Image (cartoon, rainbow, N blue to C red; front, side, top):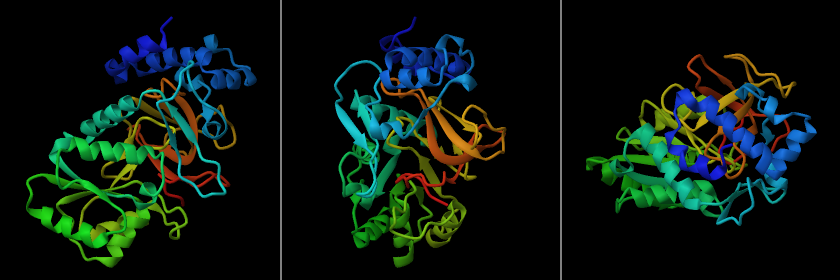
Length: 328
């Protein structure tokens, strides 16, 4: 039987053809060595050895990250990523065995979507995340800023004037510029300044967190496209509980990286999967989560298209708002 150590060593060899087989192999490991996941599977009366297809794998509700230490094996965390939330909410905690793995994996996925990080200047407009500790998004963005090897890359809190001047100055640079921003901050920038960002990639991470009235994603992107004079708005789909990120480049649908796969389940039946085009609850297989849990049922609503890409449509009723996702 494969172990977590051997899985970790072979992780970079994963490809689309082997994804199902590898996911089942990791499931068998985590069903045995992940205490919380094992208990959950037992309560469902599912026998791991009888699971032969990824569609049969039970997915751990994401809320378990708020109440338990979700770890495969026994180890002390190098760091703990925490989700954003108001003081009235219990935040998720993702126990991280190897922080450098997370950062290197995020860089690898970025490169696969956009090309080398060193081809970009990174301007990060993430005020709500900079004002707290434990954000995986801040850790990833800070690493990207460092890896870009650009003196122009950096974070911006509420200093919009400085950011606007920097964007204008970079128009003549050979490198491309990425403006990565939380939704409410991008909207404030768009309303306060008349900027032509046609030389930039605008990447929104979602999130209003009570700062503004929630709007649907299509309306948001239309406002940003018009204000910043760009053809497309790019989005990043990531969360505290995941080590992999998906990106939406053009059509509003997110494309999964090689380490990630999305399934959509029926809203009323946790074991029934929805067909392509049908709305349901997003379930994520993230093979990079081999030290925690790779099989997570989110509280996001979405649907798949015929290419296997997915759209995020909002949140399940009464679920907590999430910093990295838009609500409807």
